[in-house]
Image 1 (cartoon, protein in one colour):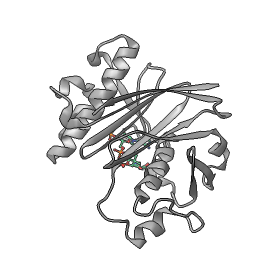
Image 2 (cartoon, rainbow, N blue to C red):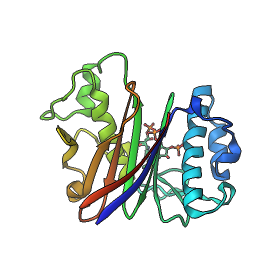
Image 3 (cartoon, protein in one colour):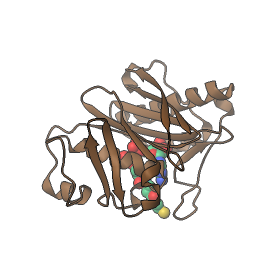
Image 4 (cartoon, protein in one colour):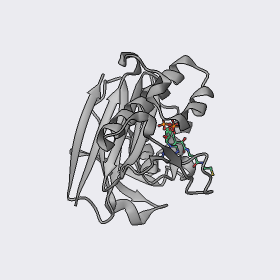
Length: 226
Ligand SMILES: CC(C)(COP(=O)(O)OP(=O)(O)OC[C@H]1O[C@@H](n2cnc3c(N)ncnc32)[C@H](O)[C@@H]1OP(=O)(O)O)[C@@H](O)C(=O)NCCC(=O)NCCS
């Protein structure tokens, strides 16, 4: 089984003409709740990029797209992993100040996370919460790469950060990050493939792809809008 994923990352400041007409109506109220200008811009950029990618694939207009969410923990339709109705695609998106990432999976589940590389190494308290006791940090000062790998996995499976990430162990091998253990979901460890995305050096971004039974190969269509 080949997993096919379209991934895009963008610097919101570089996208021209961002406005709410590029975003499905269901997201407008959520946009209105955002107060900080950089947060509003990143939100708009992520949803505009995702909507354009999905509309192109569905050969329709953005104003025809509908988004739904259902929380796998409490069944609320107010939160949870969002999906474009009838798209046949699995969606994941991530927005942070100055950077957004979007992944669309065909025949697989996807999770993507993008974060800014912090100026300072993580404080020990943060490391204790995120990193397992037997899990070395492979890159001193780059703990954020461990974080984006773990968050991409919990977003892929739609559990979000309700799951403890300390029991999700990542090994950084020459070929890239690999999930070696996840006590909460041992059943999916062999189904997961991770890729670090080629983003500007002040960011870290990781894509997680899950194919039930494992993927033989990953067909990645990668778009950089920076
Ligand atoms: C999802 C989550 C990990 C994102 O954290 P973050 O680093 O702040 O934000 P990111 O920009 O990387 O990702 C945000 C996007 O993740 C997506 N998302 C939200 N919930 C998600 C979930 N359960 N699974 C996967 N993706 C989710 C959304 O698209 C969201 O963007 P949007 O609000 O514009 O739609 C975190 O907010 C979380 O764990 N939320 C769920 C908490 C939960 O399950 N509560 C249950 C209460 S019953």
